[in-house]
Image (tube, rainbow, N blue to C red; front, side):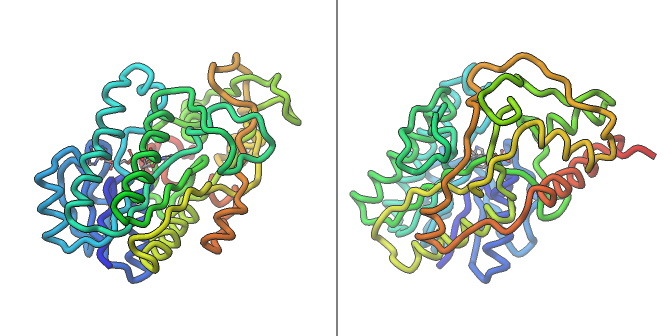
Length: 328
Ligand SMILES: NC(=O)c1ccc[n+]([C@@H]2O[C@H](COP(=O)([O-])OP(=O)(O)OC[C@H]3O[C@@H](n4cnc5c(N)ncnc54)[C@H](O)[C@@H]3O)[C@@H](O)[C@H]2O)c1
């Protein structure tokens, strides 16, 4: 097999590329470097610079490299931006996927792994979110991921391509500091940012119907997420051309925002910066925790890394890019 990883220079893609390479898979990356960084990739991994919207480049790349499977991570991923720029999100995430799938069909690629998200579920009102929980996304980002799943499954069924849609929950951590996420779009970097400026981390709402009143989420270590891709890719490769899998990738374990703030205070060495409560943000569900039974059953995969490791490795990555964060 030769796998093409789109978006492979991104935060998650670089970890996936590394995990697959280390496991002996042949891997190449296609990335337009709009948010990716080429230096994240091992030297042995060829990088094709360009967009999934460029059909001619895709045709050349898929045939030229003899690609037999695709792991598609390239996308825009900021919920707030998707509300302001829905057309950009539909173009990149849905039209880009359509162009890629057309090229995949034309090149006879037989396996396709798609980066989906827990955002497809919207505001689930259940203790554990299973793959059968209704998908009711509440922002354009989540809509593009759900539409992407439909496209992937329908194309797989019509053209004999084995597909897997992986619905990631809250991804955090880094295998190495230089691979860390550099964006400040979710709770962990947002809290690091506040702590770095000597400010108290913010908790958005403490009157939710949860044990401590703050929102509960399921955090998955990036290295575990990467091995889930490897497991999915290998499963598809065993049965090229047949079947589809739609799987949550989470731990099944809920962590409250307050618990996260306390752990961040400890790991950053600033426990005196106790969290401050701000008003609720619209669109924040009280609890989103994955049922991970199906992925365990289908792929024999489960998460190995714990929360402390996740936050500590994310902090090491943060400090690499924000040296001022470490107090003397
Ligand atoms: N980070 C998360 O918590 C999370 C959660 C759920 C799902 N996801 C999904 O995982 C995937 C990767 O996310 P990430 O966190 O690594 O983001 P990222 O921004 O670090 O990576 C995205 C990569 O795709 C590239 N890219 C974007 N548009 C492209 C295009 N048109 N053609 C080619 N390359 C393009 C970027 O340069 C970047 O390298 C995305 O599909 C995202 O929606 C992420």
